[in-house]
Length: 410
Image (cartoon, rainbow, N blue to C red; front, side):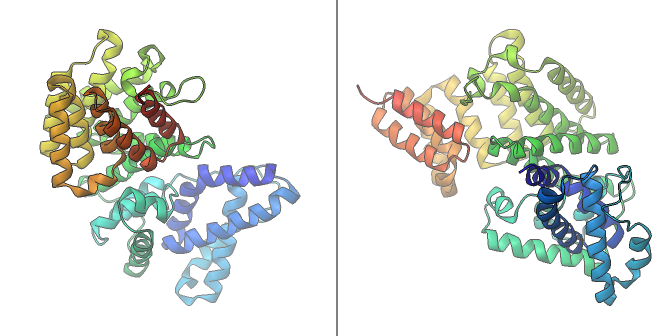
């Protein structure tokens, strides 16, 4: 079992780095993924029997390079790769020190954001190639059928190969144009990990990888305030990570969290980064979302939430970047200022304008909460049951089920 666990851990922690390194040498994302997939299969077969190698990443990289060499010898389109791959192809079983190889993920992110690639597939392509998300999970995040998403990803990788798109960071003048897709992918990766976090630690690793990539982007794009805004947003979220679960593992919503459990150092860093971004005078989506989180973080100092200011920030965010999720969150704030009855009216109007919200778990959770506050217990229980059915996180499902039970007549 130790060998299997080691292989699974390496897949979670190193997939993106290894794919990026291989893609830098062969220029073919799909070929790099196939070769690395073969390497992981070999690890699953051999490590439980032979033991875990001293340098698992190096072992995987060597085996994947061997697979690419074998393919290049069969495929004349990859023949030019043979000299470089052969030069670094060592025996994976040779007990050498761990090889050092650069983290090429940032270049791979910007490669996926090349203008020759359909903008609609750029962020999903990054999520799969750099962060290792499955097509099914990406499809769920973008509300697309898994088969459709899989086909789009295959076509995008073929485009990179056939068009010979270079694996290089673009010039400084081209970075801002590509950065929007890169930042969106990092944010999507973080929210995917945040919403799907389980006991195996896989999604916790995904959120940490997203924060690391956000740091790299902010350093690469010091004049791009949205890069700093994204970093500030993720740091604020990370600061509250430990408070999201009680000692027994149960879910704790933001307004019920104990601010003393938040990471003060991360909050302070987020505030510095957000202040630096605001000096550019170019507000953007991620800066506004970070400002919303900053207001929540201020509860640790003031002991209260500034609801009018929060509503103003949501209004500004929706004017700049309208989204169904943002509108639902705004209505939750409105309920604190205008009461649950007014908020219920707006929530219903929103669903009438956007029928897709009927499959949106936060919409049902908010509706259930507002119905509960207005004394409509039977309707609240029905809404809670729908929210439970739509929730992916077992802890959130248990929380919603408990709330529904607490409102059951006596």
